[in-house]
Image (cartoon, rainbow, N blue to C red; front, side, top):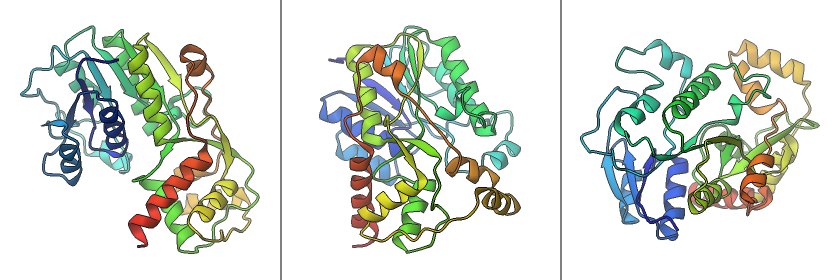
Length: 309
């Protein structure tokens, strides 16, 4: 069992809150490093008796007031997400940069024996055709910083992560289905990988328990493949709705999205995207405790309780 306190960057985010709850249930001490103590998420962490430290905006170059040089474990969940990355980059200055997250880590966590779990993205994978997007390049650069500075690291590359409190595209899909909007997902046979949040937190816990910090990078997912049509029907069933799906030629859909300036959305939701667990399972013996059908059911239950009651 892990005896040392674990520092978590991004503890107040979607993944961070789930992970904190998981680790607290395992009686693991947490030091939550968050942007602001005044946030609603910070109050939730305090209710779990988690020690929190306000560090502000990690995209700013900074030296923290606290001394973290003796911290033994760090989980980095902090990332650029759910904002327009292109516009963000245009507005960068010398002191405000997209890769300051990792630079701030090495500036403030100077223990070279630090055991770090760094959350990246499956979009970085060389097997992915569109891995040269701006988002993927930023993620890849972040991985390089971690590898260069910490030998005892594990880098995880999950696909889209879903679960209670999910945001962005997955939430938008649930909202559209609940509101009976017709969607062009019928007969879409491309298979995609996803990851339920409780599967991800379970994998992170296993790494900690097994002390599996061997300097490797792993793709990780639910270990299931699902088409967009099947996903939509599962979500509709969980939401108590009937999916209203129609067929639209993918080439035509691509042209429409391109005209609307949403070309990247097509890559995110329509193209085949397969992420395997083979190497991680082989090295650790881990298996996802939840099938995607159960994960989707729990996510839909959260949506109904939060937005429809």
